[in-house]
Length: 389
Image (cartoon, rainbow, N blue to C red; front, side, top):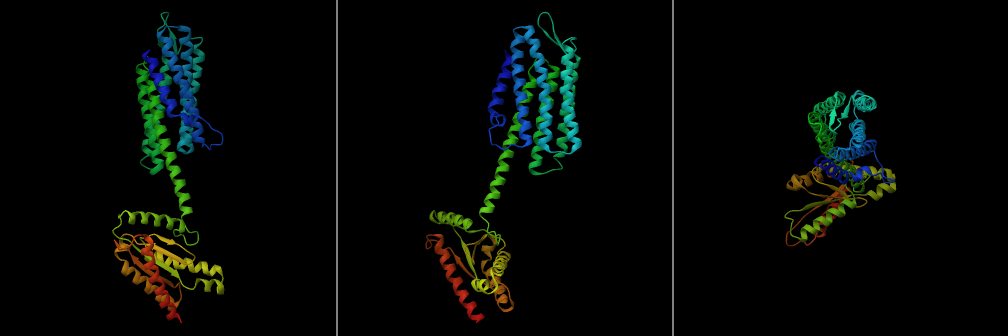
């Protein structure tokens, strides 16, 4: 029963691995590729069952049942190849010529299997059983296998070539089809050479494992992208496109935790406030006020290019200095203030700024640093108002 045991092992692994892919729960959104993959998995399941039964019937020399099951065996192979080609087309989303070659190849192999099996009922051109129950394959069987070898070789080479022309997620898809086709090609050749060995089952199992692994990775990547997009929307200020109060609250919590655990060696932040926003809104309208906020945000971002900027209130912003911005903080703040001074004289956003630096052993939380920066910002605001008047 060694032959059947390979099929039993294959269908167990296949069922466990692809349970979620084969079921179709209500309300779950599936792509065309997922649907076609599901049909392919069903056809593989049917093939495994036929292969297991063939091993049982053949070893017990029950010729009528062996004959019937051999017909089912070849039929399931034909449908498996057909559904595999349909899945590949939907999975890769390739050009029309590639689609036609692959789909027509799958249809041809399936139809030939059916035609040969129908003829075989009257004339044993594909296989027969000797009086003692021995299985004797004939030439058309090898023709069908040879066609599969050609098609899987084409898929392997084509996808390998394409991987050098594409990048990222698309490259992974072509790798998946390339390597799964390569394993199928290898084990079909072995099955052709050794017709009484279950090499085809092993090839199907490895190929589906490769595709399953890729689909799982692909689903996770897509989920991560969607999650990242949702997170970006939730953490971005829609008016100025800088980070919003939600993102600011999160980074504050992270920094408080680091300060509490004495994990911070250096921390610098600058608090900004757009002067006279209320006066702009009252005299010129909220649209002008919004434009002033955008200009203020752009001014901050253009100077502190390597640090995250947060809009933390109606007219308030904050940047937490990172990298070279932290190293050059005094120079950058001085440049920023000079720009504001010019705007005060010649027109443009007037933004007050104050910087605070973390002092180890003194500051117990983030707000201790923020308060010093805020105090300096208000001192700068007072100076600017005096100059304006």
